Picture (tube, rainbow, N blue to C red):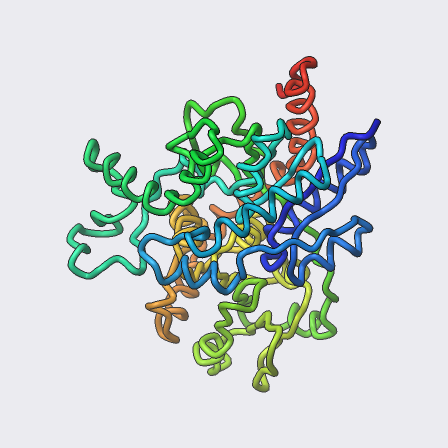
Length: 417
């Protein structure tokens, strides 16, 4: 009898959808798994094209999520105004579908809580920098001026790194502030509360689609597993101007603003590169570009492999694509998740960062000149070799850990290692 797997995604965010989709495809190919999906948003079309059944499920609107993350010091996805309704949605979904396994990404944390009631094997694909193992090293954009009292990238607001034991006290305050509604829901259900865990309950298996090269953790619980970057083949067309771009004798710069279209920086890129010093391709879904720019809604990977510099928003998908293809990155970040990616890249010597608050034509061009230095090219080639090998194994590792973990969960021989 096939193992019933329900993929739970937020369909407005590409990387949150496609990495679960890639694992689901591998499970289907392996055989013995009956996989369906739950979610909503434009990226669910990609799921349907792959032949999976899709159950339309209400989630927190993407714009609301980004507004909260970018504009609130204590960002909350689930709050008093939505948590009860959304939990009932997730709970009813699991009772109706009766999956053996849920395979979920961020923004479906309530389903993880609901799954604990019914003994459903809960697999969470979580970014390493959002886990409780990561204590970030960055300066929040929205830190009040009066609290920006420490030098460099360290401030007394979250995440309070480097000043233990006060650090840990501050971290607990932050986590409890953003997690309180989730934790209250766990208590209401009479489940065991994991206070350090954002959602209040730990998944049975947590897969990091990240590299330990960027996020090196020690002493992880066995249920936490690095699988490496999950790269997805771009389904958009290769542009007809690619030949002209690759033969352009100027240094070639590729710019993107993310897949959601909610953080479009096209105008800033045009202002920065209007002078024609570089050959510039702008990945853009919404508008025409001035004469002299390459662009449109094109296959990013096909263009990136011929680029000298990659200007990105710093999301997990584009970050690892740039690193694997060996192109130095300039991460123009908006919120903490993107900024932590950018900080780790800087530590690797594979790129530089720039807050969207400081984005200007001058600042962007200065950073292009910086990453064109030979040292960045040499370093990112080293990183590319390591991450490329990890990326090739990521899906097979995910399937191995999921199938072995489920066998252990159901009383069989544990096959994680």
